[in-house]
Image: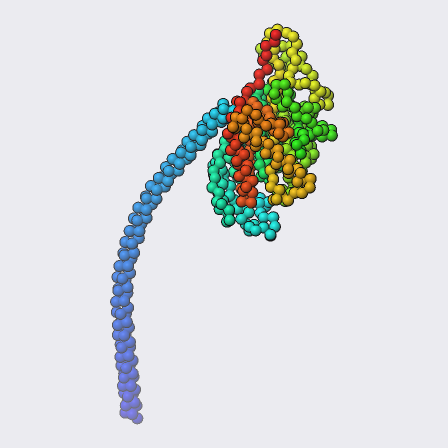
Length: 512
């Protein structure tokens, strides 16, 4: 039994040894395989590491080169920026020099115009409006072409007209004026060119500002503007001139100036006093001194610009208006607002208001107005008392602000009946105005002022000693090209008029 047990034990040990040997061989094989895999991984790692290092060095070189290029470009950019700043500075200096030269040229030109007695002519090109479109679908030309902009304010003294409408000869003309206002110019900008005339008014010169143009070209907007208190930026020349006048008077000695207002309209070649109770018809006469005057015209004394604006608002409701196919509120009359400024003599001032060193001079003006403000007699000037020596009489100057009715093409406006008659009178009076300017520019011996009540009324302003500014208002639209060219031609003829230079009124007269 013991031998059998021993044999079994030996056999089991042999089996265990063989199993252990087999297991160890298997483990050895696996370890060898792992070592081989590790060597392969290490080789791969070394290769990747070397490649990564090489790529990193390459990328770093590229980054360095790019950084150097960027630095170089940055230096170039800084140099270019410095050059741009220098060029912009030079451009601004040149612009400022150009602006100063233009102002100097304009000043010299205006001085020359004043010395030669020429009429100042400004032009205003309004923006495109809905009325610039075609009127109906039966129009032979597409509506889009009617609203095409063909008139351009290319700078502050030049208007360019360029049109290539199919079926019509091309138009390419340039018109020059003392000042040109584009569609972007505000009411304040337009008035800024007129305001120096208010100083001339108080310096003793008669002044007239007249707006000319076709229906719907912006004349009434330029002269009157908006009447709403909420739209002060849209006020026209008349309300701004009223405010400026009283501002300038406020800087003078108290109660030294008297301001009176008269308003007339020329309707169907008749003159109507819009400040009288019943809008009486008036006659225009030529006085013994050769000046024009309106008989029995109402003069309203005013103490502030607000009073003037209330009167203007009142007369605008009385002004003749009618609707046409071109303009819904077309003015059918010429409106003339006159502000008469009387500089009282030193004797008429209260002692407290009289400037120091001015001695009292006795004078006795001839009464020429009733309490109602109507003219009752000759008012050519004061009648001094018989007294030897130097007497200071009051100086009267007047500012005429004229909103002319617009010229019309009957076929385009579509007027009939009474409106057609109004259009006929309007066109005839404007034609008479053009004839007067033509006669003045050609120095004819006879000037046809009396061909129209309008020209007779404005005789002193057109051909007399007043400073006259004509504001030509035009539409930029292709639809109104013919009428706009006519208005621009009128302005060109007005610039050619060389009349007697404006004279300053003086109140000093030698008594005999």
